[in-house]
Image (cartoon, rainbow, N blue to C red; front, side, top):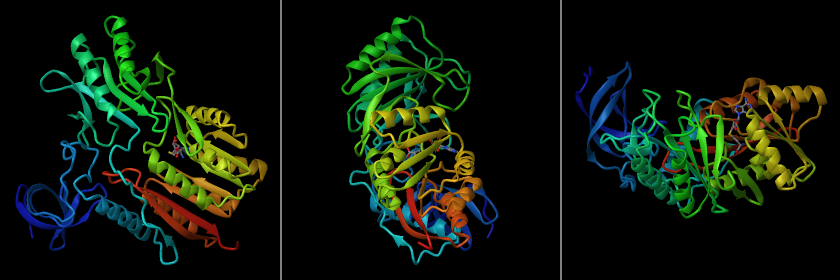
Length: 461
Ligand code: SAH
């Protein structure tokens, strides 16, 4: 059948796409409808047509899915963050499990019958879990400064007074900054012209320590009188929980939030947090997992999959600030961490020293270069290799070296099940390894993202 733009269609939604959009069919034709959920019957208007699929805009819910709930956040539909908020939490978890298993079967060609599949680990409280918030600052339609989140796929700011994924303190911090801007006539940064002063408000909280950092990202050093920033700093430091305020200067015309230079306005410039028994110092720039409750569960899974007895040589590739490395170091003979960002490795070394960990060594560089280079130099095998790559997964050179090093176990921590599937296919292809266990952990409730830990072990052991 031929469809035209703006034509109204009626659909039963049967599935969710990878971005959380509803999927339904008319005959063999597939439709993507943002905001629709499996179990809904909807009326939608045709927006865009391709050969075998199209996009349609939700116009009316003719029948509501039994899994549909009222999203507690008033801007859930327009903000680009929480694409699953209208879906009951148990159904979100089911969607994530199916998404991962589907990718492993389809992209990885994996037959999962012999694999121990553990039920996904969800959260008891799937809101207020983020230890970090970053609000872009802009000028609202009324000409007043505003801050919130970008609408999906755009850079228009949806004002958001209290994001329910973040901590309650964020609301007061945001208000305090906006009030200061209005009082002092401080202009918000404007992406189009590159003019204006305040670009982002970044807040981090150590859930264990209760310490909070506010980082003001500004387009240049100062705005008007020097004392203006001082006044804001004093006000922020009076708010409950805030222990340090820093300023990051970013004059680049780009989407990257932080610039290179950070300067101290008040307090220590870092906050403390703990994962298990390891303490970390976190600066504005440090990469740090955003969901501390689930991170601990994720790392505990990785540690148990590593099966350490205290005698092992372990590599932790893509180690960030060494969180997994230090977690494993207490149970291994030696841990080597590799990370591409020099600043993160500095943090890793400092955190090792701070915790009295002397058996962890860190390398700055690409995993796919450092690992082969070190293996060639020392010939030292690994007992366990842990990888936790970014979404794009591992480089083939890295995977090939891992196989040559023939560890007893490979633990793959993944934030993208499509690249996980691709990499598992590669690692399992020569038949030396078996996929043993899979554990998904919901690190990002209300969003489509999910973490997976996979354990592979060598067959002849
Ligand atoms: N394991 C850490 C960080 C995981 S995020 C944790 O749990 O906190 C992935 C990390 O891989 C990032 O810190 C990123 O900077 C790093 N990275 C990206 N490409 C890399 C590469 N080719 N080699 C080494 N590290 C890389």
